[in-house]
Image (spheres, rainbow, N blue to C red):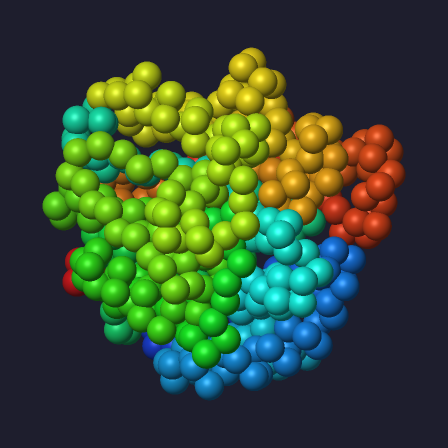
Length: 446
């Protein structure tokens, strides 16, 4: 294939990750993305479709219809051009997806929020907590909390392994307009969705989802288009926060952590649908564990905040223990170590479980009811990422594919012992824990 739009784009596969470099205008970036990741985009769509059918009883037509009715008219022209070019790249590789498929894929987390909102309105799940997609554990620290007063940020992603296995791509984007970006993506998405971002404007951003969110605004702008606009065009954290709040639809409600390496300041944006909270610090830390903190945001959730045995509450308790224990000594090596932590505060002992920073729901007979995952559900942590101010200045991050503790997940052995999940056999795959890898694309001077 000698399409001139491929010039400058390339792909590397290393230690379980795919690294993709794309550059140019939206037509070039989209075509490079679609062409170079074609088989991974196909796999992602198939997995979302398969899981939604099995777990939600929703077919792909529901995601396409929602995309057409709620998202399509709200996507900026630049992003539409990129989506159309992704489709052209896919079609150049012999795949027959159309633009609505890619909008539906980009909006699947917004649509998942809407799905549970609709069920809540119908009374079919309320007052049961409404499961938000995934989990995640994260922290961001600065000032005297870290060993050299740099910002240090760490994150691991939680989700069902059936779909989580698709999030092993790091993309370095050098667009004609706006900031250069490094972000972890599910192939085919304009934005991260696990939400690990570094921008050449000096921003580092991550999040953890808010458990039990019950609200949604179908008239708002979807998460995926706001998140991409915010990270590509914001020059400081206030601009980023303003973009995320503006016309928010409540899809994929999150506790966002934002750091500005130019100033050393960090912020927490807890963003529900109709309520939000912002807190900033130049000294200290924020932790993320899928637990709403602000009283007004909590009003938009259905969750038992008194129960100390839930995964979000137990992980928050453990994060605070770890941050205080290692106060003043937090750096990149320490952050990598903390992401592998296996102490369960709900049991007061070290045991890989739903309540540990390195989450192993597949080993927990309690399951993860807050996310609607039953006993020993095949879900939990599947990666780890860590960066700091000096690394982020050049767009660099350490990343590990698999569980930070180093334990592998073997699909056939798991299904032999857990027949209740045999419906996932067709696509559930092994997840090997690889070594930590440094991605260092080197942001070009503006």
